Length: 482
Image 1 (cartoon, rainbow, N blue to C red):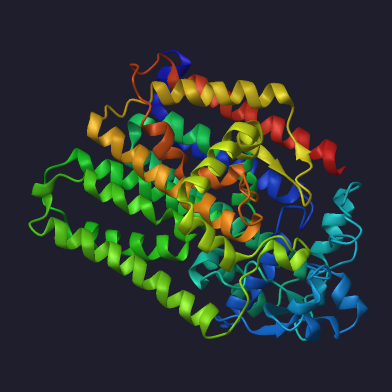
Image 2 (image 1 turned 90 degrees about the horizontal axis):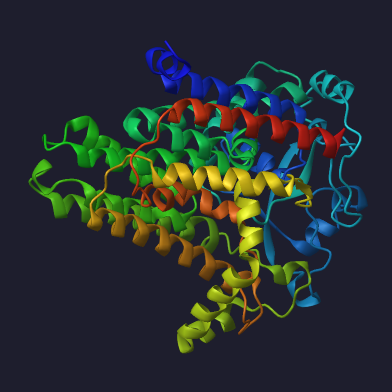
């Protein structure tokens, strides 16, 4: 019995998920706390939610600055905000000081980041008492708007840790592990729903960017997991003509809700509902419309509660001193010149495609300065493409077109969003787009490419490539921080 036969007999998904969890746990503890883009703003939001504070309180930038230099210099800093913005409200959170040791905390002014981390630092953090009553304020202008379910695993882990009065470091790593295991469950069920595409799903999950975000306090953990699982499940529903079960109907409703609680631009995954054979449900179109309306209603309701009702300012680059942005003026510009926006999006692809690919596969660190070797991006990218071309989904032309359409609409949506809030009015390129934004739609993008028959020894090759990726990730992380 050769290796491929052994893997098939044992169950490829069991080996794949074990590898994913192993490297996820390793990166969770090896990566210094808060050395991931925006993580310092995600943890306070998760802590806040664990205390039952679902709607983040607000404070003007001026009020926050008046709290004192110690608080204002730490964490997120809006010192670059123009004078006319100092009375604007931004979201804030109160978190225990024990979560914020000076050695770990990034300082936006000095651009500090940990570069001499050691095992002793992990041990010291794990032994730091929580002291939940000793708290300080933190600005979370870019995460305070996120719905509670976006941080479900991390908030549950935090609630349990606080109830048991665990040390601060223990709670921090429990939050990362909770996100990891949530995503691992989503990856597992994705492979179970689409067994023919198991190797492709595994290789996407083993991208360093995917693992690093999954094993963190970031909202991306839930977003990545839900979008991957949702796309895989909806794709699997096309393979049966039996009437939709009550469990499947409930699942569709839950998926609509969870996608609404992830980043709104990924709601287009619900379009894959159209892949389901019409005979599976007598009120097919009514159910589809109801799912879409539920998603849109929840998005609108949460936006009204968290933004309109709180009168919070939508965080844009204007608040860090880039005064050429103006969301209201940009909206008018796009409505008058829609083709100019399309051209800006195309220009961005033409000029920044290498950066998008690199961020998609893996670049992390507070300053996006932890980069993998160039040869790794090329080799792992080619491996993913090769497995995409032979993923075995056996799609019809219309099904491929729907996958590409749904992914394209999501991409246009997040380019438009960043054009409105991060780009100068009338800019010829779109600023702010990151390659990891493509990860939630990756299965749709690559799943649509299947044109070749499945390769021989696909599980063995995928396993070797995944382990290779994990090792390179850990080694790169070690060189960057230790």
